[in-house]
Length: 470
Ligand SMILES: Nc1ncnc2c1ncn2[C@@H]1O[C@H](COP(=O)(O)OP(=O)(O)OP(=O)(O)O)[C@@H](O)[C@H]1O
Ligand SMILES: [Mg+2]
Image (cartoon, rainbow, N blue to C red):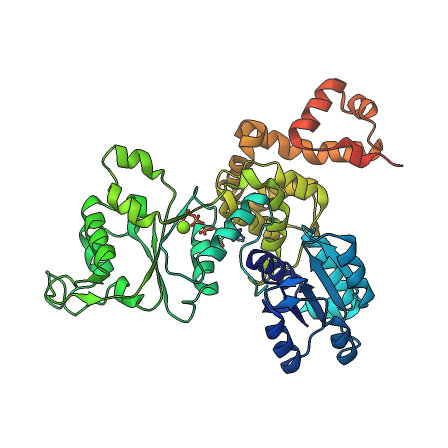
């Protein structure tokens, strides 16, 4: 099912596109009325989602005519004007729904799904390929700021420096800029400068001629040349040795390279995106990173927020990874609200990467279709038992259990604390269920002080209110 989206604000279009893609829809994007009309002539769409103020006119004006041509296509109107007048004009044209901006993206996705006919949409979703939209999940304010920056660099070749802790999605941002940008038909070449021995960096980046040094048995084309016409992603730039920094700076300044052992300057047309998890400024002060290279690279900085600063995104990311896990052959799982809450409270020092690994592990170990808070904890216990039963089990005690404990540890203070939590969560959940959320009774059954229980529940992120029967 294809949705026609008419929206000229690219940051909104990207977010809506991603949300609808996650729902299993294909999205055709237009940014003006002329494009909309061409699209309507050439394709068929399940739903039209349109903005009002467009560069070449008012999105509402033509709607009655469109309704006549496509009487079964629901129309959803988005508008930043937020006036009663726009709302009324939209509904006068028979629009299915009207969303004032800023709108809740989930509500919009819901409305589109309903409009498209829930039965058909569900059917379609069942064997849908993974979302084709922007691969970046998250709608928190810090991510909106990232999307806005991304949209500003899509149609130019400004150098981008992506900064942020490990696992925050720096490489994904670089890929998104390439895939969505005007160089998308060219190559995307990534090079991790930290992973290359210092004496080989030059040859890796710029290539070498045959016989340039011992072992150079054939000519080698370097990453710069491979990326010609596309994007060169220089990862872990903060770990590059000084000498290589100097060579890199020279290449960036001249727009050309010379292969090691070669004589000719070769012009290269590449867009540079660099990334690092290091804090470069103190490194500059300490003489470990060239200041002039920093200024060359830091034309458009994009700062990736650590996951703990966007806890609102954790549930969506977790669900995204559960979905992604199915493409790796793992069964389909759903995440309960309390499990999502529990995940949202973890510090995730390893950021999105750590969350992703954890979710894959949870999907691998889950017994039930739905993963809830209790099972996240019991998974450990189960796994512990299973892996000691079967020495051949894929996940060893140290790998999975200790790993989980160490991840959970920061939330509860220690590995010991997280091991305790692994037992407490299912135990407390059961007792609270039995007592309908009555903490006094629960504490009596457990034989502990009521305040102790309250404090532990709070530490563990378990909300006793959820168990109250009303
Ligand atoms: N917003 C996001 N939506 C979906 N997946 C994400 C998001 N951010 C990161 N990921 C996933 O998390 C993992 C880590 O991301 P990535 O490799 O881009 O991090 P990084 O910042 O480059 O980390 P490092 O500094 O360790 O290299 C990848 O598997 C990536 O696909
Ligand atoms: Mg990376």
